[in-house]
Image (cartoon, rainbow, N blue to C red):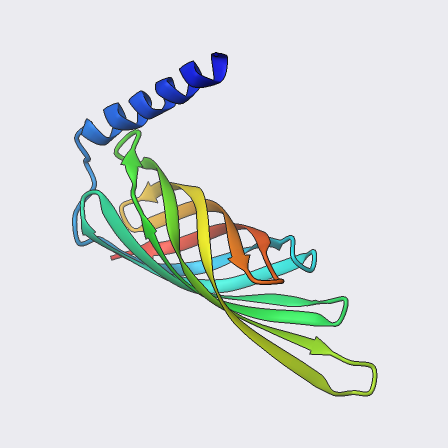
Length: 163
């Protein structure tokens, strides 16, 4: 019974937040650096991102990340995600995200050879963003990358230039 009420309250809160006026500028673009952690091979990730806000309530984000070698496995992640930002203040926003990824994993073998596995997958998660100045943005993103036999949680912090 309590689960049903919490679900209803969550849906109502999301509906109310979507009706709030969005103070963000449409057609805002940002580019920046990302760094963090992936649970797949328990190692650090680093990458680049580009975001473009088409309208007030939708932003498209493309990124490339490299998972550093650990346990003889490294990887590249190519992501295209859609964000639905909700402005809490004119400087702070939260957003759910969903999208697609292409992951390419490289396994280094003992005999000095390597094998590469390429897979398409899906992303789902959430993030927060903070505009320090009109041209500087900080962010945190947490997402689950569903990739057959290689699924992982990815947690990143970012710094970017808004133009």
